[in-house]
Image (cartoon, helix red, strand yellow):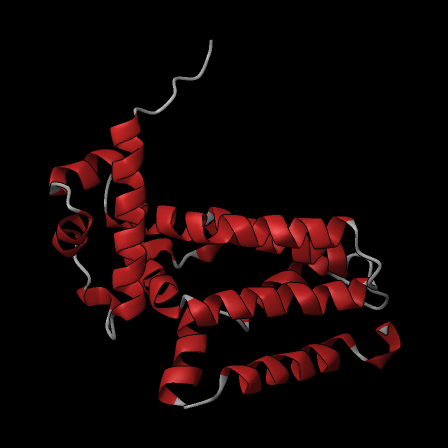
Length: 193
């Protein structure tokens, strides 16, 4: 059966909603305060459109995350496919890409954690990051349980931690990235270089 193409107005509405939600979360100092009413008004659609299209706030936030992650995931795949980097460097690059995404989208990712998407182990985007990281860790000498190591390393880039360190701890993005790289070096050990 052929897939139905989305009506032009429905596609326009979807894009307007995603853009409005993305902008509102980025600008908000309190991600919890961004309501479905706010998003509908900013997108120029009725609130019912949001619920029909995305189900609930969690569904909408998940769709915004997916739209923001799609180009990054494609870029990561292209780098991984043509990579001449060592598996260890791939681990560092993957974690740095995830951290940069969390830094740039910390309000959105904090909102995701607040609505229950924080059980990251069931979120599609978490599964993707975990799988990519685990595959690289499988190739790093001395890593005994790549599955666990991938989970443990991804815990270092949780949105709530990133927001706390940058917003409350006043850590710079570059400082956080350098600290993560140093931590990964200590976890993987010099023997895996």
